[in-house]
Length: 216
Ligand code: CTP
Ligand code: MG
Image 1 (cartoon, protein in one colour):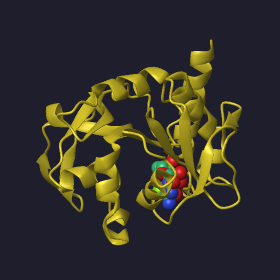
Image 2 (cartoon, rainbow, N blue to C red; image 1 turned 30 degrees about the horizontal axis):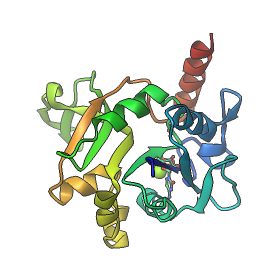
Image 3 (tube, rainbow, N blue to C red; image 1 turned 135 degrees about the vertical axis):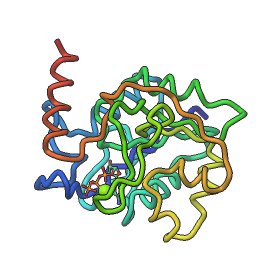
Image 4 (cartoon, protein in one colour; image 1 turned 90 degrees about the vertical axis):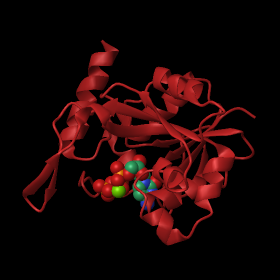
């Protein structure tokens, strides 16, 4: 069985402040989720499981499951409907700018030496750690990555970490961190910054501009 995509789309999108759930907000003329589905299909991923908010349906040809309370719970729910692939890709529906090339690059990077590979962009800002507003230190930017999705896993590795307690999963902001916490090896796949996550209204506007630019 070929790689299976698990697209998490069950969030409310509180920071976007839209009427409905973020993955179904229109972006570039269609529900945001559909851009990701197209990118995975174009990369040859045939089976796509989508974790959904209550009352919403998966795009045609995708398998829909009910999402969970936190993002990782939605990943676990989607994994439950993946079937029996060797490899799974986890992706946020909130990243509509993902491309088939990114999906292909991430799939190609998963080797037997690692448990997972993650799309990430080199950090361009200077980042400082602060205690409240008091700067503690300036971080070494050359070692920092802004993490994205897709995150690609050997299914056995992801299933292993997903078997942990609800509270452990709830604390994780991405899935690879669960692998890291268990001593597993995770590698970064350098990706363009424009595979950003739509979180705020400004992000949505920027995503629409990038999509319009790509269509020209
Ligand atoms: N997600 C999910 N299930 C949840 C929470 C989040 O499937 N219980 C998904 C979102 O739909 C999104 C991705 O995880 O595609 C990344 O989450 P985030 O950007 O935080 O989206 P939301 O949780 O929807 O936004 P907010 O935190 O602003 O409410
Ligand atoms: Mg959220």
